[in-house]
Image 1 (cartoon, rainbow, N blue to C red):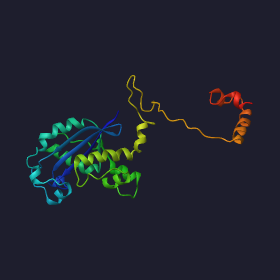
Image 2: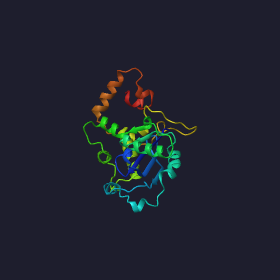
Image 3: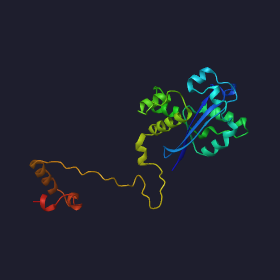
Image 4: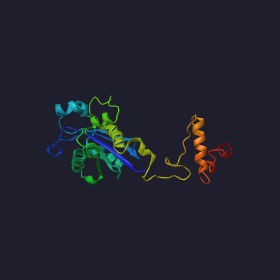
Amino acid sequence: MLREIAFDTETTGLNPLGGDRIVEIGCVEMRGNVRTDQFFHAYINPERAVPKAAEAVHGLSDDFLRDKPIFSKVVNAFLEFIGDSPLVIHNAGFDMGFINMELERCGKKPLPMERAVDTVTMARKKFPGQPASLDALCRRFNIDLSRRTKHGALLDAELLADVYLELQGGRQTLLALGAEVAFEPGVPSAASRHVNVTRRYFDITAEERAAHRAFLARLKDPAWYRFGLLEKTEDAA
């Protein structure tokens, strides 16, 4: 089953080339477009002051971040977690620009942009002319935003994973229609499992029954009889 990573960062500002740094990373694992309970999360000392405007967005102050590890101390754990999985990112250019700047600072190879799946692009194609922010998409898909009093990388990655599922068709994607499915020996796939449902009964009138008998009389070997859906002796009289 395809493994993907919903990925988000919080930063000191908007410009990695101008000295802004990452202060938080959040990653959530998804398998088959649905998030699992596996995640990576780290607060990071940016080695510079956090502007008040940025702190107002994510709530991470200089005092809070002062004793947190610098990026080079968490980079190996981060790279191990994401592996070679595609990265699902809301506004991919922003987060990829920051993560690659941090990777280059500590002598690591940058992540290729081809690994990124941009949900902003997906949303604009699916809903042209409509708001494509994470908040707007959560409201559109009735995803609970009550915990999001401020931006947070891990929470936003969790919300993004749910939005990503909805952008691809919602819970119906779990039926695996037209998609590749991983099979395990002896374990039925989601598409092949039988579901028990309550049988429904409908009252029919005498006129409807007579009309049905007349219809069956015009058919050769009706399927209703062949598959035992009706008793032939009852309806062939």
